Image (cartoon, rainbow, N blue to C red):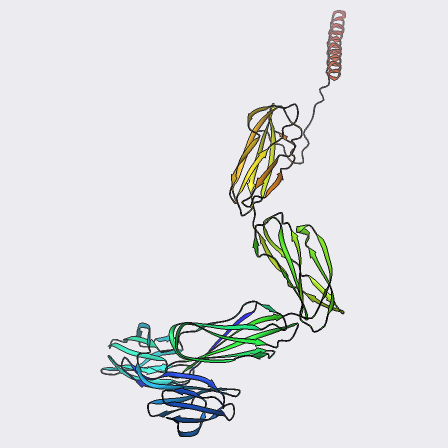
Length: 548
C-alpha cells in the first residue's frame, strides 16, 4: 500500500475588517455537485446550472417555482437573493459545485496565542508576521504582513481587527516600548483524510468499494470530495458535498472496469471552505493492485502458534475461456526446502484452492516466497506472504571443568521463544562415574526469556560428557524435543597465580623410572671421579714437597 498526502492552503482574501467578538459570515445551508439536468434545493429556492467552461457556469435561480433569473457566474463568485447567497464554488467536468448560504453573526475565531511584542522585534504566527512601526499618544501603528500582502493598522487599547483569517486584539499599550496582543484565527483546522478499501488486491472483474474517511475537531462550513483514478476506471459516484459537518464523516463509492495486471491509483481531493470562503485543499491517495486474467493469491496466517501451518493458493480464471494452468511453489530452506507443483484445469470465472502445510521449528518472522501460475506462455505471480510464528524455543547449553579429583557440570536451560513452556530435562552421566553433589534432572515452567540452571559434580575427571536431553510442551499441547551440546571438560589450574605467557613454550621434564636410575648412577660416577682426582693431586703435591 502506498499512501501519499499533499496539503495546500489557498487564501482567497486578505482584507482588514473591524469587528467585535463576532463576525458576519456566510453559513452554508446546502451544497452539491450538479449537472445541467439536476438541481439543488433549499427552502423555497431551487437552482440549476450549466457549465460553460472550466471557470464559468450559467446559473438559473427559481423561487416558489417561478424563474428569478439566469446569469453567468465565475468560480468563487456569489450573489445575494433576498435572504440567501448563491456561490459557484468550482467546476469539475460537467459538474457545477454550488452552495446556498445565509448571513449569520458567528464567532468563528479560535484563540491562537497571547504575546508581549517589543518595538524593534517581529512576531511570527501561522502565515503572518507582526512588528510595531510607531507609537502614537494613545495608539500604535502595527504592521501585519504575509506572503501576499502587507497592511498597517492603527490600534488603541481594546481594539480588534481582522486580517484574513487572523484576528488581532490589542489588550494594552505600554509607552515604554511594548504592547500586549491576543491573537485568534478563523482558519479551518486541518482535516485528516484517508482512502480506504477492504483489501489491496482485486480481480479484474471484481467491484471495488472505496471509502473516503474525513475527520476534524471543528465544524466545517462546506466540504467537497472529488474521486479520480489513474488509469481511469468507472466510478459510480465521484463527487460529494456536505455542509456543517464535524467529527468523522465517510463518503463511499464503487469502482469497476479496472484493467487486468495493473496498478490503479485512487486519488481523493478534499476541499473545505471556511466562513470567509477561504479554501483548504488536501489530496490523499492509495494504490491498489489488479491481478492478471489468471489470478494467484497466496495466503497464510499473519500470526500463528499452530504446529502445522496451512498455506493456501487461490487460483481464479477471470477470463472468458478454459485454461490449463501449471502452479508451482517453493518451501524456503528454513522450513525444510521443497518444490511443489500442480497441474489444473479451470473454466471461465472458475476458481480452486490448493492447500499444503509447513511446520516452523523456531519462533519469528518467515517470508514465504511468491508462487507462480503459468498458462498459454503467460506467467502470473502471487505476492510474498509474511507470517509470524509464536512458540516457545528451549535451548540447553552445557559446560564442565575438571576440579582436582572431580568434574563440575553446569547446564543452562533457556526459553528463547515468545510463549511459555513446561520443560522436563534429564542429563546423562557417563558409565563408571557417580554424582558427588547436585542433581541431573529438572522440570518446571519457563516463561519467555526465562532460564533455569542445573549444577552437579561427578567423582573423577571425565573425558567426554554426552548431550543432555529434554522435552517441552506449549499451551497448544504440542511437545518438542531438545538436546544440549557434547562437552570435553577442561582441568582447573592448581596454582591460580601461575600465568602462562603466550608464545613462550613451557619446559617439560621426563620422569620415567629408568631415566631416574640412570641419572643417579651417572651422578655417583661423576662425584667419585671428582673425589679421586682431588686425592691424586693432593698426594703428588705432598711428594714433591718432601724431595725439596
